[in-house]
Image 1 (tube, rainbow, N blue to C red):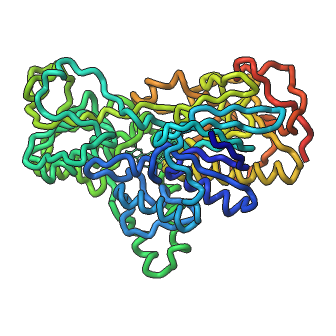
Image 2 (image 1 turned 90 degrees about the vertical axis):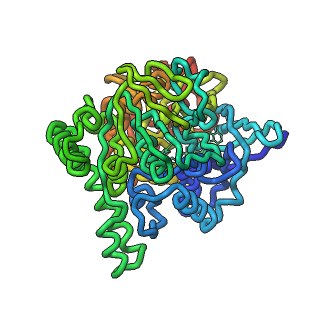
Image 3 (image 1 turned 135 degrees about the horizontal axis):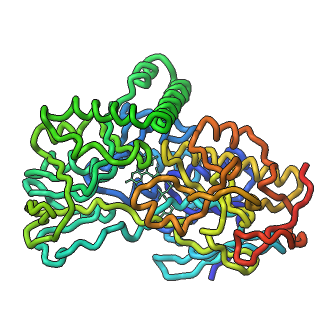
Length: 509
Ligand SMILES: Cc1cc2nc3c(=O)[nH]c(=O)nc-3n(C[C@H](O)[C@H](O)[C@H](O)COP(=O)(O)OP(=O)(O)OC[C@H]3O[C@@H](n4cnc5c(N)ncnc54)[C@H](O)[C@@H]3O)c2cc1C
């Protein structure tokens, strides 16, 4: 059993983990760190998903890192390009040699007496158990299970003789050329798969239980294309990034204030891209308001174009049963299929499935409250990365990493060792993820909560978070700073841990 110590332990070598390591190198170069990654590769989501057409659904000027301009002319980028971008970042910033692959973190135990985490990882390649210690634990483990996507139980599925595939486990050798394909689902993955598969399949049907808002955006950014001719990438990138941030905020706020108006605009935009007489209300007009679930982006209207060309169709109905040759619907209609793709979603998983314990007591995540959307009440020297639900993930990931560096420097400057959020005394608590999508609702009971006011409330607003996290105070009533071994505070009992208590408050400079 190997054992060693680092100042900061990052869990996950995806977009967030690599970004976190770069921020750490740049802002706290004296800190030692390691990245533990369960898989054998860098890239997380962008390495795992290999289905046809895999791409971002937000623009790369905001999904890219603040410190590394996105220079590819495609604003909506394919999975391979994003994976290369993350790998290039790791290489350019010398992060690669700090990554320990095939290390799946299963448990982390905090000891207030010595202000250290003891982290247990399982090596999936050798079967070995590895133990490391660190002063600060920074999880960048994404938000869903890697080993298994979500597939509902479909009646009769056992008798289906065709090929059944989940997008999370796409077979390398799946040949769907000239075949009839049914894609079950209506989310980002389904709307990506349908036009991509329609290029080679005989026909693709998107079978959805209920519609989703689908919006067409240009795959290239006009402003970025123009600026690229005149300005170096480093100067053009923040301009385009902020333009897209502000457009996104305006779009979201308008959806919240005037959902009826946005609903009409989206319907009109879809109508203009679909054949005359198409039943938009049935297939593209959801019952919920825009942004109650994420909008689905289709670059240059590719989904609509495939429907218009007759290469793809949308069917809104429920499955009665699978048959030997396809799917029979409640309406009685049969959809023959050689291949059925279950684009039915993800299984949410907090903190990559790892268990946290503080001073001998296990943390019940559902009882914790997230401080600034990135630390957990009652859990010392810990941060996690959860991106925005209404904007690009990396915008928040960058802010979280910047904030962790500020905290680490503050601890050093003030001679403290421990920082612990303390749950708000009063106020309503709400789920940390405020979407009503199925994958969120299925797991919402197991996730941390958010509070009613700052710093416990998640505003899902990047400009506001820039002020809060890049420039705002590090010391407020929501956190306590202390030394190793300081006596624990007996009152009030922190409701966020089963019996564990946060370290005592000590004056901060
Ligand atoms: C198909 C798809 C498309 C998406 N498109 C967009 C988009 O366009 N825009 C957007 O903003 N967001 C999008 N997202 C959300 C997306 O996950 C984020 O953009 C981003 O990739 C998250 O990066 P991450 O590093 O935080 O998490 P991940 O990409 O999930 O990476 C997490 C890493 O942590 C590792 N890990 C997990 N648990 C452990 C453990 N216990 N021990 C060690 N290692 C562990 C994993 O192996 C993985 O490498 C998409 C998600 C999916 C599934």
